[in-house]
Image (cartoon, rainbow, N blue to C red; front, top):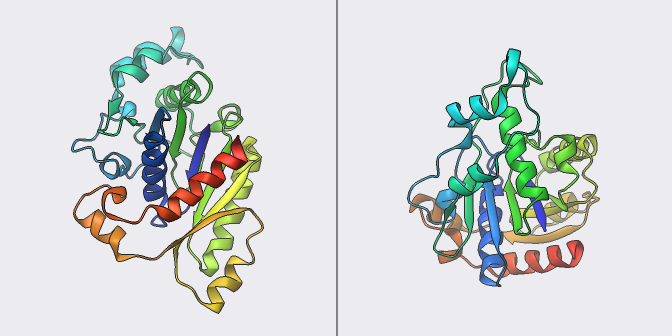
Length: 248
């Protein structure tokens, strides 16, 4: 089961990724969670005191594995050992990796780091049987066309506001461009009102669930605690159940 989670900054992508990783691990699944966001927060949300080393910073390994004769790039470098060596496990048994950032020289820049990180994602998506949870950036460009075909479900996290529909339109376009067919939505920070329901009613994708607004998540972030240790997991259990129904 391969799940990519996207949405604009600050909507709760990392909270959802951490909650799902915890719940799947709790229920006996082998879980791999990969932080693909430049703003690295998933390790701390999963209770890790220290962040795993970002794979984009393995400069010597990248140079050796990706750059070939005459400066040519290898599109499928060996990465399985790197995947194992730089994985860290939290106390719940979730495997955690951090991709790190790519310094782009321009739109569509293809660099050794990009080739290396996409190879890592291909390995995670196509060669492992774990439940895979990808905490994406606001976009999903990390995936690329070939890699994205292995993703079972793209979850767009939105807040119940007018920008939610705009965000969904962008995610829909990105998903279609690279071949992701299944898209579903989680509405986060939901406060019941007629206006909120009206806006949510404009969402054309399946809605996996509503996560009520709660100061608990703010407190968990301020105290650097995993949200599943201090906040209500019931809304996320319902979301997990619907994911299983859709994917399996």
